[in-house]
Image 1 (spheres, rainbow, N blue to C red):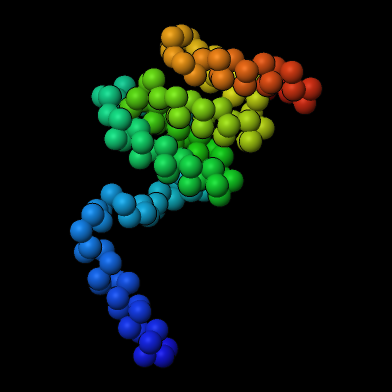
Image 2: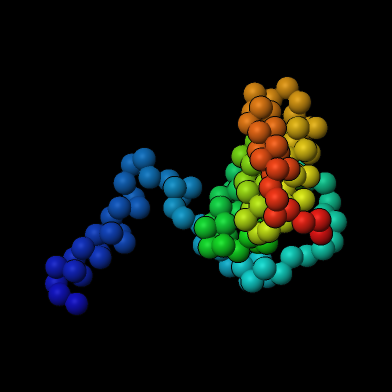
Length: 145
């Protein structure tokens, strides 16, 4: 490495994280959950969780990471966990439906959308969810599993 590269690396590692306005929550989360990353999902029924929007948001972000990596089963697991922490989360249900759809699980995607509509009948997003449901119901490649 050249001295200029070493200086830049030193600057990036030691100086930037300590700038005002930079918080630990802004840093990326490293995921080391091997079972989830490999798509192994625990089939046990989880205990009901106390409402915690922060944990719901964190699980959605991790689910988004898995979704981008096309590990839809792991993403689904994280979105379901987010819903356990915040049952009325529009983003969690929307992401869950997309992950089911991308993973080829159209009936599950439709059930997720219907569950959202059931739980949140007065939500302003209901019209969007109904449109998504209609689109999935019209899909000719849909197969019951």
